[in-house]
Image (cartoon, rainbow, N blue to C red; front, side, top):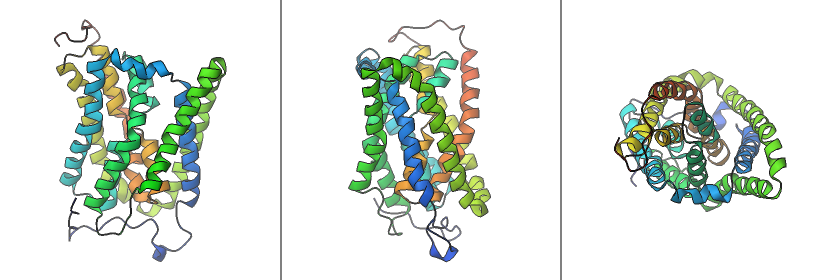
Length: 318
């Protein structure tokens, strides 16, 4: 894919490893601790999964196919259009595409539960998305780097780093599932402590990473605040209405809304900081991670106001 020519009126975001800025290479500590935090998060996800969660796709074929199609194909295309429309600098543009390629997370399950979604479908979508992300996330990231940052010499996610993505995503999930299979009561007891530990570590690492870019932080947020807000609203809207228009019942559409509309920002940040060594590429996910709580809650309250609508069986008309 041919790279986009740099705009003469806009400069790319400063390199996170630019030696002219002085100091040690940034993100050294974050690059070490963030994968650990993400591994704990994914291990916690595994503690809540069983093999039957993957088999359940045959129970919800239409809902699953529609949601995955939106997640894997439609959202990256929409995000690409937004990035072009907002004319973002290369690093922030790649960061947005990295966010779009990230799967849903456990937060989607919580929001789905709060607002009347089919949580079992959420669990199934999260499980499948986490596996597919091993392929789709490096693919979208490398295509984005080639297009937006083609002349920078950035190597992107080569095979060894793609294996690291697999290790960060799949190995902890598999380990968590194994623990649940062998010791279900222990897995149940560990579920909350693991979530708390991962949240604390993740918050500390992200805060430290952002502090290293404090001088530029205001400009970054100004650059990506509106586009991340628009992307969040569009994701949530598509997540609900695409399944509804396909005849999926309302509670499953709510589950899809949360799964598609709430991306795993922690995974995006981990890839940006640890594998791409770029704080700037992590800024969109960090900004989105704050805004998403409000947009998802707003969507949930709007959808809950529709609870008087009778639940349709899959395949019935909207």
